[in-house]
Length: 264
Image (tube, rainbow, N blue to C red):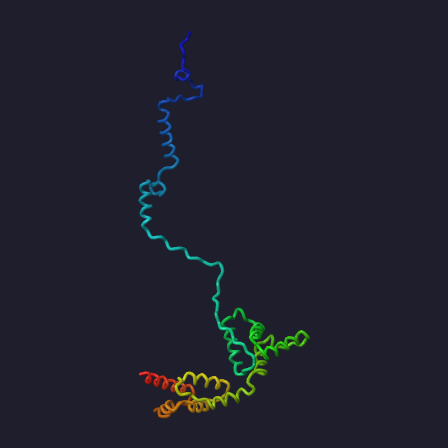
């Protein structure tokens, strides 16, 4: 009887079996050597590659990065441009009871138009805006005109700002604007105890409605000044100013010196 043969013995396994004999005792060592070789071939270590740094190097770099200050936050950009909002004062209402307030009303409207140019570009928009601030008889008159348009009677003032203001002056303004301004200017006096700024504002408001020359304006302006300013102007070494602007500047300088000396 032939002796028992171990089929796993290397002498009994030939090339035809298609199997390579591996010693079980050295199986793990061979696998480890092959894995090391495969790792070396597949991913050679590049000393310049930051991913191949040692763990100790990573820890040191991370610890040093913790000491660095945090980067500033990224600026926030808005998708839509936000235009600045102008907080212009709305005009006062106008009711015709005081015709002298018509110019003030129109000036307030113009200032609001300038502060909001994108909202009120067309003349018709300006007219509609101003009409919302009319009250009393003034509003009643324009309501009648609007009713006439429904009957086929159209008015150009509803489409043009200049025509609208002309109608306001014609029906609700001062009847004799120039004559009233001349009378007010002739009787204007600077009150004692007041600074010259108030007198200048009133004088130029009335003078703007007239077509007077410098000589006439200088005469009326000088006449309305108090005595302590008149005396210094009349005794000035260069004499009285020839133009209204020169007269105005000299009077303002004298008034400023007067109040400065009075406070001392």
